[in-house]
Every structure is written in structure tokens, then in C-alpha cells.
Image (cartoon, protein in one colour):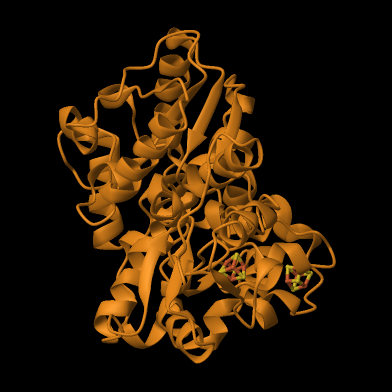
Length: 385
Ligand code: SF4
Ligand code: SF4
């Protein structure tokens, strides 16, 4: 009896296509992606080569390269063939995570288990999710309220970032916004774990959150994380979740510009704004955060040498926030140096991953005497009368 011979090269290629990575087919190997990828500031990494390997069916699923992409979108924005490079990266990872053909980095595997099990990357109990709001008298969302505030995992659980959720809630109360939270019914939005390759986990989280929003009659969601923003706005609709989604910087800008929030206290500081990839490059939100900072009396707004669509990622996207990155390879360290060189006294952030990464860089680089890391909401709260 003749034995059926499988062609491993065709197989690897077919698997990638099957899980949504067929975009590599239109790559013509110009190398623009490798030239703009931030990894090449700190080490060699060639998305062009990964596209070529995928075309040839030679993808090495067990390479460290599989896990490097931070989904910053710099390459996709500049690719002359419109290759959805992030989709190919996601498919590579999905193949590894789904088929078990190579090891998943330990820290990512544990995080995925936590998110799948208890809906947050920290592995903290679900019933502690709303503890950030203790003592603030924040209401549970009910139908007819103006907005749902969805703080997301990091501001809900991280002891250093809870201040962001607490500050947003305090600002909304001061502005008289009729808002609520869904508290312990909230689960991770799933954006980053999807980019890390765990598609089934994403589908389950999205299904849960969409049902929770619908049950409560939610129409407008205000989020602190650009990652929640991106997935609610661009990925949940195809799963039946259609809501108006606003990042907190968009919402605060509208409250300030309509006169509901008044910023009168001076903050006499040089403030540099760091564009988060998922607010800027992925969703074209560049102006509202800057308009907020410019409306604070006394603030001198500075820019990084690379800003807006050229901004360097903090290094936290696509699950990298949960993976180990050697000190000398941290993009946020480069940004920290740049901020100090520009004369900034405060790095203003609009993303919880940026907050974590910059804070870590500030402490490890011993810069806390010269520069502070603050969420834009914190600066707004300080400037309120
Ligand atoms: S920029 Fe686009 S076409 Fe050029 S090598 Fe990268 S993926 Fe291929
Ligand atoms: S999305 Fe960013 S990190 Fe990923 S390959 Fe493209 S440029 Fe590099």
C-alpha cells in the first residue's frame, strides 16, 4: 500500500492561511517593514524575512522572533503593498498556541491561563475587580445612564495604576456625568491576548462582555485603555457588539470644550505626550490628548522627536507587556532618555501599558527626581478648580 507523503512546506503555509495569515502572499520583499520596525533600534528583527519564510512554507514556529512583534502598526502603515503584517504575526502565534507545535513563552502561557480562567492577566479573583472604586460611591450601570466607564484590567487591578480609574471616576462625578460601571461583570477586553495568538480566549471574552453590555442597555462606553478602545470599536462589531466607544481623552476633551469641565489651576511644567500605538497609528486619535494638555493653564507641551504616526511604541502591545524583555531591549528606556533630553518634567500617557512601561523605566533608570509619569486624567484632575 502506498504511503501518503505530506509536503511539510505546503502544510505550514496552509495552516497560516487557514488561521487568517494569508496576507503574506502579497508581500514583494521591499524591506520597508524591517526598516521601520522599532525592534531594529535594539536588536535585529526582520518582518520581511518572516513574510518570505511564510511564502515558502518555511516558518520556524519555534523561533524567538514569533513572539517579538508588539503590533505597533508602524510597518503596516508604510507597507507599499498593504500587507496586514500584524495578521500574519497573529496567525504565526495562533498556530503555535492552538496546535502546540512549539513552546509558548512561560510568562505568556501563565497570563493566558489567568485571562481564560478569571478574566484578568493578574490571576486575581473576579470579585475583586471593582475594588479600585471602593469609597468613591460609583454607581452600577443601569439602562438610560449617559455612559459606561470600562477601566480595563490594568487600572482595575494594578496597585500603581488603580489611581487612573479612581481619578477618572472622580472627574466624571465632578463634571456631573451620569455614569456607571459593570464592576465584577467586566472581563478583560481580549485585544492583547488575541494578538498573542489565543483566539478562542478572545472570542469567549468578547462574547461575555458584549452580552453584559447588552443586558444592561449600554450604548456608550468610555475606556481608559486604547487596547479596549480598539477592540470594542473595530473588532467587537463583527461579533455583534455595536456600541459608541470613546477613549477617555476624547471624552475629557469634549467635556472641557463644552464647558462641563473647567481647568483653572496652573500646572507650570514641561509635559511631553507619548502617542499610544492603539490610539494613534491604529485609530488616528492624535489631537484630543494634545488639546487637553494645551488647555491646562501653565503646561508647556513638548513633543518627542518621533511623534504622532512616527511615535515609537512603549513596547507593551500584542502581549509583550507580559513577556520578559531584557533591559537593553526596552523601547520605553529609549523614550525615557528622549523625554529627559527634550527637557520634559512629566511624560503624559494615555494607555495603561505605557504607564507600566514608563514607570518601570523611570524607576530602573533612576529618573524619578527629574521626570514623572502621569496619565492625562491625573493632570486634568490636578488642573480642576
Ligand atoms: S513592507 Fe510590505 S511588501 Fe515590503 S517587505 Fe514588508 S510586508 Fe513585504
Ligand atoms: S507591527 Fe511594529 S513591532 Fe510588529 S513587525 Fe510591524 S513594525 Fe515591527
